Image (cartoon, rainbow, N blue to C red; front, side):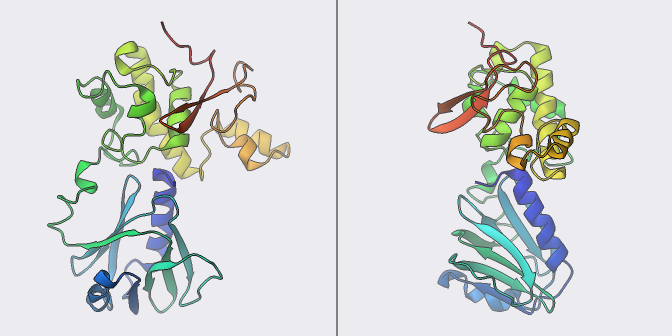
Length: 275
């Protein structure tokens, strides 16, 4: 499933293609959304907003298209009405005279009024977006030390969109590694220095991933490994998808484990368990 940085990158592409341009046509695959096609045709997109893994396309008539890619959804930007050859099913299309923004395979699509957005079943329960420019480490630290979260294991907490929105499997592993915290610990098990490091990493790593197209590893090291001929999958991350490969810091083999059938990775030396 795409995580916050990937959704924000998709939003950037959608904005470049359709923002401030009057739509020539809007298409919905789902019958219950068909009445909105005429309401949105001829309108301008004024903003493409992300909230964690969800996306909101705001139009100047105050309607907004909500979408969540879930596991299989993907946005494609093409020249106007130039559809790709694909077996995916087109769910949503926004056309203007020059570009088309096409959403394939996603099933979670709605049209919302401004009054509906704050009470939307998914959006209303989201925690702070990790890519929000308003989010600060102090805010994350406050969440970590709250009674609601302080006794929750990080494996669970860091996938909970009610805690921080936009974090998924790879960001969870990378954030905890950078903060040098074992995934099986809880906030209450950590000292102030560890929690401060975690609060910093919870913002810095998602932003780096967004800024550098999914690279969460040290940027200088990633560039060095790339220059040596390593594939992107080999230099992209610190620990994620690197089971049994040496830790980039201490050379200890990276461990792969599971929590609720979701995989995570860590270094047993750099991220020691307490007990």
